[in-house]
Image 1 (tube, rainbow, N blue to C red):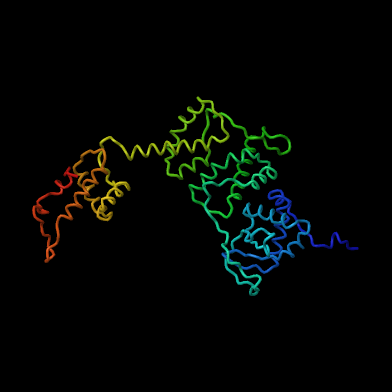
Image 2: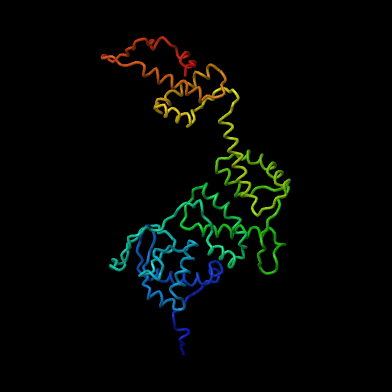
Length: 380
């Protein structure tokens, strides 16, 4: 004999998915997946979107209020599992949702959309770079703590390094919370596996405490990748590690994230190093591939000298000074002097009616001065 407990529609809950996302999130995800699978989604911006009438949503989830459904769905959105396109459910006409799975090939919808199902004229959710002020949401921190046993302090200690890494790469995603959750979860598991003696029976996370820098400390692979992707030479980084370790060990300071502090230290040191190269006061020979700095072009621009004109002078300028084998402490200054002289000389002579250069009164002929005299002229 059938019972109402077994004849009603059932929601199948994958245990592994519930352990990862949370029970409420998994229940809602399974229901939404059924709606999308058996409904009539609309293809938009390479995603299948579905408008679910609120009465049907309440009928499928009678044990939750609209406020609870709204809160759980936004947690799934923060994790990057689904995409939402509606205001607060209490103010919406329908529940507009899509799974965060782009469609490989566009397919036509089974039937034409009715007026009620037409796409609202609002901005679609899109992938974006990480914001400078990004921080992990409370939902993600709660998921890491409750579902994965990751201490809140541990997760927060990874946030700054995570943000620096992805800002350098200019990567884009629909949910930075989801990417952060996966990275922190994976890193925490690796650390737990590397130190099994610190784990108690049954999986239980230990609080991450501030600690002093060990004498044999080395930056993590992620920290090295962040720095090298910023254009900092690996040899420069390696040479700076002993100095960094000595400096902080002598001060006895403790912190929860030495990698983040190391990244900041290297960037400051690299900035000083590159600046010293650009402003080297020691006389040196001009390089074969020498190019004027952007500051030099800016100065010429303020003098109303065209950039194209200045660029045309570079090859002759480099060739002359390499042949002369002379040393100077600022080739940019020498180049400015040369370009200004050439620009002034160009405007000293007009064109006659027959198209030939005609000297102004008191001006010397263009052939009366050699390139050597032009380049070594110190009037500018």
